[in-house]
Image 1 (tube, rainbow, N blue to C red):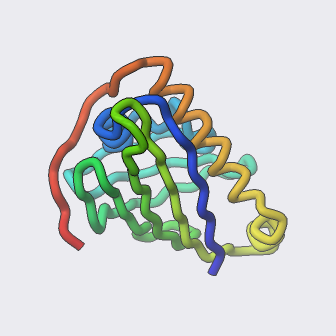
Image 2: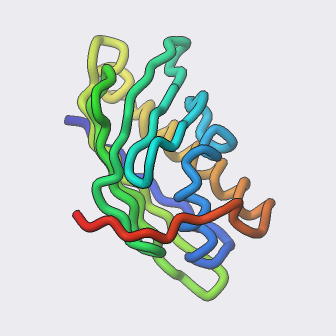
Length: 151
């Protein structure tokens, strides 16, 4: 099992950072490999990603969610099993630390080699930097889902 942990500090209040992260259908604006996400219901969404030129699809289930604190998920089906959590930490009234942890099982030679050389960590760090630019340039979130999902 491979693990990725990356962090970025964003210059928006914790509520704005959290609210934007709950807008899954906006992810293609800042997650480079994401083609589309369709929200199925409050705790399920369908992802289409393009990794290394190969398109993949999977469903994800939100397994825990607490406003301004965390969103945890796990994949359902798809080629690569993974689970993760993103946490939000108030630094000041106007800044937030966002931390992403992803646990995944590399499949095939390309993913295993990529995991060994840190390609996944590099991609997640770049995506977090893109999230920072996206939310800071907007100044406010595009929407919010403030529901609570117990583990």
